[in-house]
Image 1 (cartoon, rainbow, N blue to C red):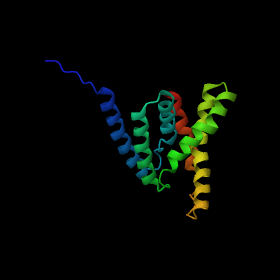
Image 2: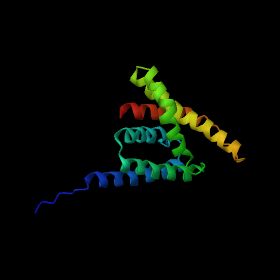
Image 3: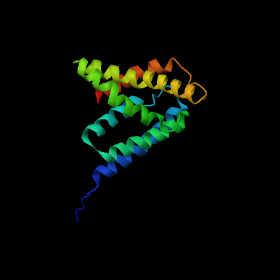
Image 4: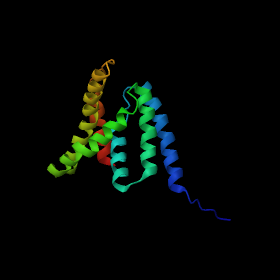
Length: 150
C-alpha cells in the first residue's frame, strides 16, 4: 500500500531546522564555520515576499538559537532583519541592477550592519559592546559564495 504525506513541506522544514540547529552548535565550536546569518536573511526576505508564515517561524527559531549561541540581545536579529528589509534593501534593489552586486551588498549589510546595530543597542542599553573580529571578512566572503550558489 502506497502512502503519501500531505505535510511534506512541513517535514522538510523541520528537517532543515534540525540540521541548522546542529550546524549552529558546531559553528559555535569551530570558528571557521560561518554562522549563515546572511543565508537566514535571504530565506527571511523570500518568506516575506511569498507571505510564508511557516518559513518566517522557521527563521525566527533559527535566529533565536543563533542569538543564544552568540550572546546577542534577545530578538535584536529579527528587529534588524525587519529594518533591513523595509528600509535598506529596497533602496539597494532599486539602484543596483547586477544580481551579484545586490547579493554582495546584502551579505555585507547583514554582517556589518548588524554589528553596527548591535553596537548602537549596547550603547543605548549600557551593555557590553560586541567585539569586532577579522572573522567577519571571512564570513562575508564564504556566505557570499553560498548565497550566490543558491
